[in-house]
Amino acid sequence: MITASQLKFNKLNGLIPCIVQDATTDIVLMLGFMNSEAFDKTIKEKRVTFYSRSKQRLWTKGETSGNFLELIEILHDCDEDTLLSKAKPRGPSCHTGADTCFNEKNESKGISFLEEIIADRKRNPKSGSYTNSLLDSGINKVAQKVGEEAVELVIEAKDNNKELFVNEAADLMYHYLVLLSVKGVKLSEIEAVLRQRHLSR
Image 1 (cartoon, one colour):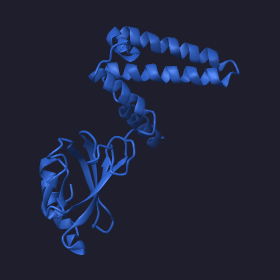
Image 2 (image 1 turned 60 degrees about the vertical axis):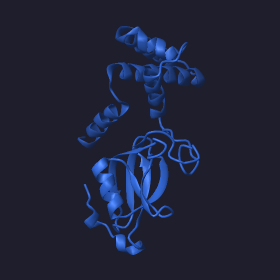
Image 3 (image 1 turned 30 degrees about the horizontal axis):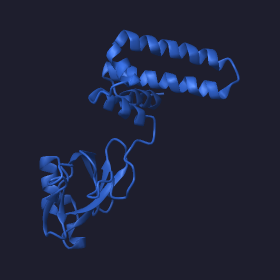
Image 4 (image 1 turned 135 degrees about the vertical axis):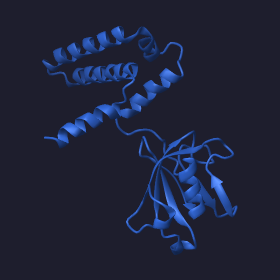
């Protein structure tokens, strides 16, 4: 972990810009400024704290709204005068209520967006949800559905209807992610195994 002594606060009257990025989605949430005290408080409390230039004091993001930015990792750039905070947002990051201060939707760009939806259904069950009915059915039923979808994909692969093949592939991917959720396994864990296999070959 970096320390305040490594950073060049003198370039901007004791402040350095800090970009905040969602540690899961990689979406940029906001930009703020830190002095050495704000930096130390961020490291100590694991919540992103800035120096407010308008209020002339330390300001922990979420201190009023409850929408804290839980620090996961903090990095500095090559010139040691800019920070990148990777955080887990506890609600919207912008005071307007938007996900980000750049008015972007904070959601994963890849397949992990579906993993997040499944995780949300697990935390907040929704009446009539097919995902919840699957999650409630137990490991045997979910595993069976993955097997059925895999067989349907293989059968469709033998034909030349791309649309049907893509839809079967999507069905398999969805049920596979539900199975991972039931087993308590994150997609990132699978990715890590695949990445390690690639590096060792």
